[in-house]
Image (cartoon, rainbow, N blue to C red; front, side, top):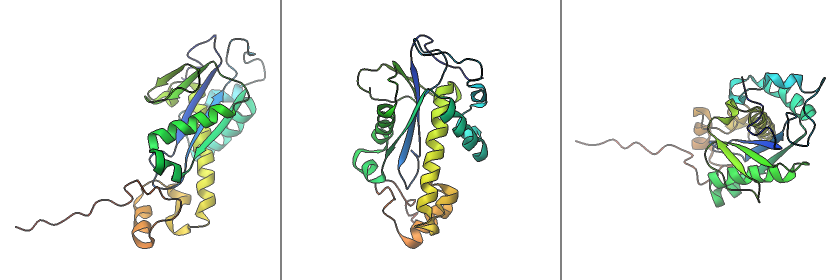
Length: 212
């Protein structure tokens, strides 16, 4: 069972990203403040937040479950936001910095300023003066990070479905830009698009046959 918070007396925002390991498309991140405690904020009361009990790591959910929970999160969260960093920006600053920047952009849009950030993973750069805690497998530990993982994943999937209409030969409706064999075969056959991350290894290195 996921934990509702790390610090009961602070307004906490959970943060997570989606698309870090993809060959194409932006990286998305989300920040979510759920109605569980939070210092001076109202604690979850009767009739509020029951659907959030189904939260789990987005990777453990079906696509239908993720989209159903997205509606619950957006309805029940005290604040939520999504940040995006494009493929061009990823190529300029690297994927780690881009993932963190996407989280910063999400936090910056929250209508409530958090007093603490819960970050999925083990790397982060401070956002302004807000303290943070990194949590490996945080999306399977804390509800707010799990909620953020669901928003980041579904909003990125929506975007990949949209650009799939421009370049259907890459099958982004199925692989969402990840290095699936069908995606790499399309890169080999058709080349790259403006959405590809050119600093990534888009194709595996050529395997040279040794002559004896």
